[in-house]
Structure formats: C-alpha cells, structure tokens
Image (cartoon, rainbow, N blue to C red; front, side, top):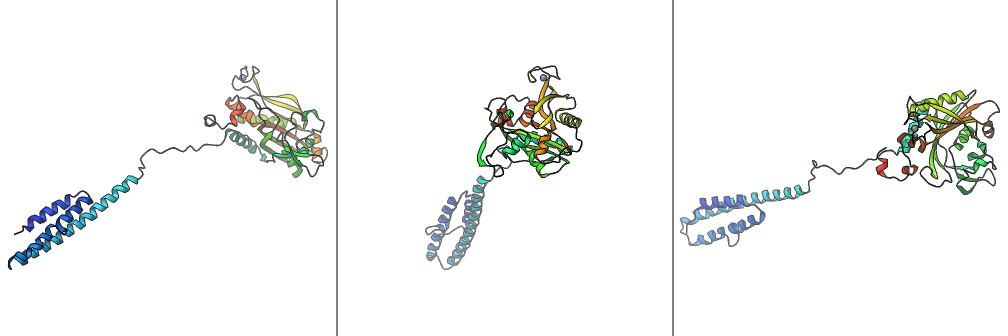
Length: 347
Ligand SMILES: [Zn+2]
C-alpha cells in the first residue's frame, strides 16, 4: 500500500486548523496519532513493504507524525487561550454601563440654619460656645433670675434627672429648657468684654403638634462690656436681620418680659412674603416674630459675681426651627424630625 504523505499532511493541516473546540481537536488527535489511528496503521504496514520502500514510507510517516503532533499542540494552546479569554470576558465589568447612583445626602436644614446664623455673628466678632444639654437647676433657672417660686418656671419646669447637684443640696440636674444657662457658664468662666453665640438643643414639656416639640434648637447671643446700651442691641439685630432675611427687611421691637433681661423686647420683622400688607403666614399682621432680647438683668451679673455696676450687656435668643420655617414657608415643625427624604432633599 502506498501513501500520499503530501495529501495526508494537507488534509490533517486543514482539519486541525478548522477545529473549533478542544473536543474536535482531541478526536483529530485520536484519528491521526491514536493507537488505532492513521499513523499506527502506516507503521503496522511497514513490515510488508519492500526493502526499497520501507525507509521512504518510514521517513514519510515520521515527518507526518512530527508535523501532526506539532499542529495539534499549537492548536491546543490556541483553543485553550481562546476559551480562557471567553470565560473571563463574561466576568469583565462594562465600565461604559450607567452605574447605580448613590445619593450623597447633605447637611440637615436645621444645621444649615445654625451654621448660617453663627456665621453672621462670627463676622460681627462673636465666638461660638456650646454648653451641655444636661444642666444644673441653678444655671437653668436661679442664676437667670427665675427663683424657685417664680411663675415663669411653670412653662419650662422640665425633664429632671435623678442626679442631685453636688454643689446645691436638694437641687437636681435637668435637661435645659433654653440655651441661656450657657450664658451663665461663659460668664462664670470669663471676664468681659465678651461676645458669644450659643447654639444647641433645648427641652420643654410641650405636647408635640404642628408648632410645638418637646425638643427643638435655639441660638443664644450675649455681649458684655462697659457701656453696652440698648442701641447696640438694635444695631446688632438689625444688621443680623438684613443679613439673614435680606436688605429690604424692616425690624421692630415690642416691649416684653423676660426674667433675665431688663428692659426686654421681642423682635419682629416685616413679613417678607406680603411686604407687610398681611397674609396667611404673618396672620394678616404684616409682621413676623423672630426672637426675644433685652439688656442683661443686674441680678444675672450678681449671680455670676461680676462687680456691681461695672458692666452692662445685651442678650438675645431665637428658635432655629422658627427661622427655618419662616424662611422656607414650612408650616409643620414635625417635618424637621421625621427624616422623610422627600422633605429633606428639597432644602
Ligand atoms: Zn405676610
């Protein structure tokens, strides 16, 4: 039997080249190189050949075996590479696809307002001081000229702790009902001149409704020096109102009573929604109440042991929620605390 090695090589080459997967290639290996494969058949036939033919066919078979082995080895590498890259391609992240957005969030509107108010007063030379939310009864009431039997305590007599005040027998710590005890702490620690703003949470025994909360935020201001007068208070607060609510805003003082200031006043601004004509936000009055203020009561100086008659001072305080409600037209204080992102993301 004679073999056309040239043709067999060509066929094998074509078959191996066109093998599209490892299984087909393995079948081809068996076909040519297997125990019952073509080459085994050729070698088996050698013994029947003549002395002249034997070396020629043997040489041709060896070349064929080497060629086919090399072709299959190369193809095996190629196919393996291809399968590897295909399976890893499945795991590759397509960076051109639009991603799932992660919402960053932002500062709560109440903190924004606190920062903004503090910044206005910082620009006017005030420094920020933060007092504790748990206060002594002395700082929260007595030192602020609200003695134990004073009727104005009733509205604020608030959340008491079971911890007694070690310095004042029979008195207990409580959650502060206003930021004003912060004034006492500053005055006990520092001598005038001083100018501080005190932001923070306060607690009152109020039932929660659209305009009340048992907890809310205040900002308190205090300026003490020699010869501080009511005109300083008016100038300071009118500068603040214009900065916070806009240049067009009008401001007025209404006489009022606070135990820790004398004289005392409440501050109104002209309603920026109706320009003072009267609307539902200002209750048809044309004015919006924004804060309380006054000249520091001599009894307060006495409580912190400042020399009698040496200093005068001014103080003011405002509710942060009220400022935010006025500015953004929010009509329910509970919105601030419910953490509803549909509300928060608007501000
Ligand atoms: Zn109005």
